[in-house]
Length: 296
Ligand code: R5P
Image 1 (cartoon, rainbow, N blue to C red):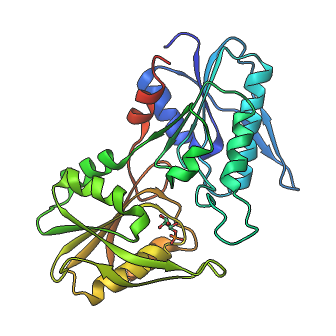
Image 2: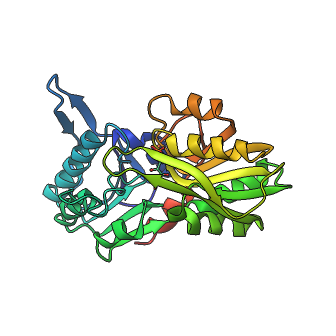
């Protein structure tokens, strides 16, 4: 057992917190959480005075509830005078609200960063945050870990990669897909995704490069929320005569029956990490997260 080191797991990251504790001998603390009828959370946890604390909480749905719970746990560690506070947010919500896309829009990731920075924590670790812009609001003590090498390793170990082409659903995610394709030693292309900023509707009607006929496709994205980006990608890829489609992402939120709809659109399998635990979480993040917190 690592002396004085505690991992505090929020309700959104119990699996990862438990894995970290078990693998690396950190004392596990699961705060007691009560949700009142009006939706308020109440958190009760024992004192962490003089402890080196790592709090882990993904900001998956219900997002705003998970944010306030995270802030409550940090606040409690501060009040108790923990010797050090490290925070792990495996999935960082609001990272897509990183610019004023339409005049008057609030850049909410900047607000979230401000709230966390207020506590002056030692280090913040997140995984495949949506954009560099989002990262820029947090200051120098944030570490953005990439799960792409782990996801690529999983694919190499479990899928026959003969005849594979890697596809990014949009230009914004192209460098991520390139990184993945480089590990697989495969070609990579991107699709042209257009979003109506008023309605949020997306269209994916053309691709950039590559003859896809008869190819095995691996779509790589940072996240799946409603699944629309992947569904529209699959529809276009099918029109281009691909043989089969796999989907790889870091954060699978899978809202509104996204998993069923994605499979109906032609994808054979979805592979994600356990930043948001569900049936697609085949890649465990605990080793790379531990590498970022150890000896610090
Ligand atoms: C957008 O740029 C992201 O990288 C994802 O492609 C997108 O946010 C996924 O959302 P949805 O599953 O709702 O299309």
